Length: 210
Image (cartoon, rainbow, N blue to C red; front, side):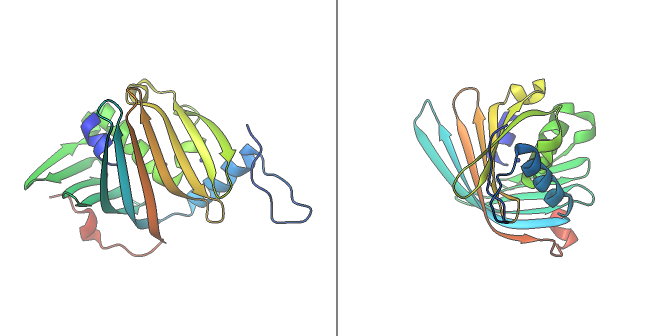
């Protein structure tokens, strides 16, 4: 389960407002804006670059791929294109993994851990996880060009995988542009999202689970 997750894969002052005189946004206001933006996401597709750092080996692994998400039906396709081919598809209660010419299908309905991981992936991409108090303790800070939400897991299922998760948001679009996952052993995974297309039509075949 950890291998699958690591393969993959919004109380401090905030950003200035748009009116004069400029007023800083509170954490609650930032979270409200992110939640409002997340509620408008019907579909999302983008390219991504993932950087995996192994603390013990002092090794860096970089991969590239594409992601497709559709809110209706809980659909997600996470596909690595280089330097290897690997595809993860979440379609409702079913997950399909394709790697090395092999295809495996798993029913998430009977696996609580898998359901939690799938839910976290979907919610992190949209920012919906920030308003679920039972999942994470959330702290928002502001950098020069983004909002950063640091999430400390509260659920035992997530605690055993991650020490913390950081989500970087574009303040103008309130969309996630970077996901950082820091594991308890010191390893980290950073996913940068780019060329995002919001609420476009995505072919049903993209999410097909055979």
